[in-house]
Image 1 (spheres, rainbow, N blue to C red):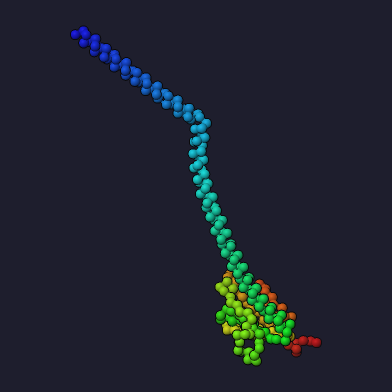
Image 2 (image 1 turned 180 degrees about the horizontal axis):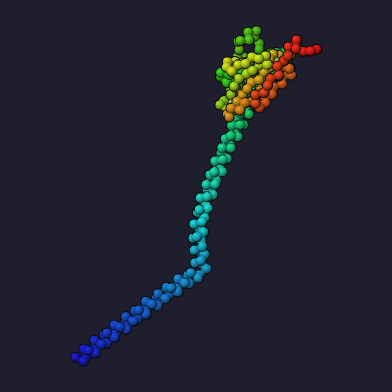
Length: 228
């Protein structure tokens, strides 16, 4: 009986000692874990890693903002580029038309031939021909020197002659001979914003100029109006 009590007592003591050892090991492990965490927290590498993680968040936000700004800049650049190309196209078409009118005046001044620039407001086109036939209404294929078309960015609004004649449809004709233009006038062109430009034909000095806006024509005076 005594032996059984002693054995039971020894077993209880052994169990208590084992439990105490387990608790000590657990507390030691916990302390070591906390020490490692504190060391990691105090470690510069850990601080740098946490800082990098924080920086990554801000960098992504900044990247989104930069992408949005770049997109806006590209959009504005595209709009400006489109406007610039449109204006350049308008200027090129107008310059070709003015050059055709000037070509007629120079060719007539340097020879005894007659030339005619026909402006077609219905077809939005023009042509330069050398007059070789007495029938001015007939246009021969071999007479045509230059042909041109105007597009959506440049079109003819109306033509006004210096004798008061006006038309916004059909054909208008400017004839040039060795003495100069038979009639002067202006051809009003509109750009894509419907801003007017005037191609002015001066029959007194053969000059053909491009001016912005709808300019007033210099109407030649009759001989009865001249005081001398």
